[in-house]
Length: 366
Image (cartoon, rainbow, N blue to C red; front, side, top):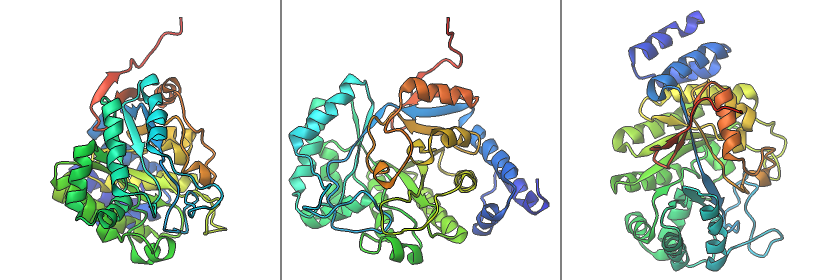
């Protein structure tokens, strides 16, 4: 352990909360093994040797969006080449794959569409829940929900209550990006501000709902801005306890309005996951989102603080439109094999991290 981190190591071992300054120092150190060892200790204290995954699919009902966030490769303007929106029958038919694949979760997000009516979103959830009652519906970012409050002309609490009545089970964490004003104003200035993102998740948590939290890293943000973002999420978790997990999202470099930025490096991937694990003393789960890091890096991150590798996904669009080189989806067998090779025990979970089926750590090939 580098001498400069000994006081932080002592805090971690004593179970003391790390400060903003501690977080910045951890990002600045070159001693990856030191922060990895500490992050792994915290990870194993919280989750033992388990590595979670979920059988899930993504459904992107439309990529038409009124905003033009500079980092985004997914959105299109209405009528632009490559724009799409799905009618309800198409959505219900698409979701039929979930039953065939025996999935537990469907993750639904889209662009902030200028014309789809409020009832479209309610009917989408109702129709899915009616047809596939066993599926957990994890749907709509805080950015989308902020938009719903305008088209429905209702406050966030009422909108969330109506969505829940229609079948919403939990919220994804997308749309948080990096909360710092400097970054927000440069990469996504048009959409709901960070305070609004936090307010919508706070409202949902106070209703008894659960959600995930995220950070988009590896673009123009500084170490201080990363730590500030994490600590704002930590403060909301202190207040509500509603976050299931934290998911670092690696910035994807292609087909957007921020040309010339390099891809996040392995060093950055490792530091963000390890430092987040050390700062988030109040969130139990940290996800290595293999769609963005790639499968090989996600496997490594299981030793650097991550205890979850997301899921099978089936067909991901948003990140691949930004040039992601990971597969569109992956089999359960392959995920379990990657987890075992990393020395972890694969555990299939539901969205709320309840184990559905502990997979044996050794499986005979004979």
